[in-house]
Length: 196
Image (cartoon, rainbow, N blue to C red):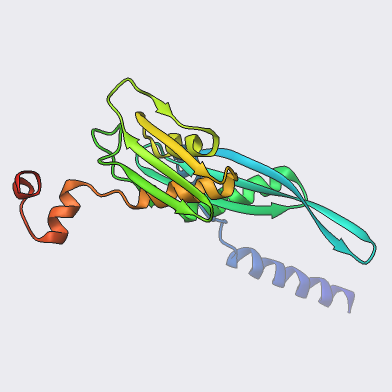
């Protein structure tokens, strides 16, 4: 009886060994690393928030992060977690999914001036000649640097709340258009856009 059981066990082991194929790598990490290296992320604001529950207060952290490739793509996101690094990681992942494209003139500045609003925050962005640098405060600077804008003048009015400033800056960047896109929308040549 014991010998028969041993034989059956050996047969099943032989069958399973024959059926098994060598495992393949599930995904290529090099592509994920390339995508991660492509973007620069900046933590704009970290805030401690609390939730009042029956037993007292539960504290968590909220992070506002701006992500960009410094070549005309930028995005932002807000996330909460019990620990600061987790909140930043979550916000960074979300920001990478919310990217917008910003048209750059000569790869360094804006095509024209723009005004952006969000809540009580208002942001004015102006084009600037080469060598000016980024003249902007805190939250606006993070967005403009991440987008790859090298020469710009910026002024914020109203709310100084970093959330409102980031959103107002992104709204101003969304208003930007280059001459080629204007020509396409209007159905005219590039010469007519500039010369009328």
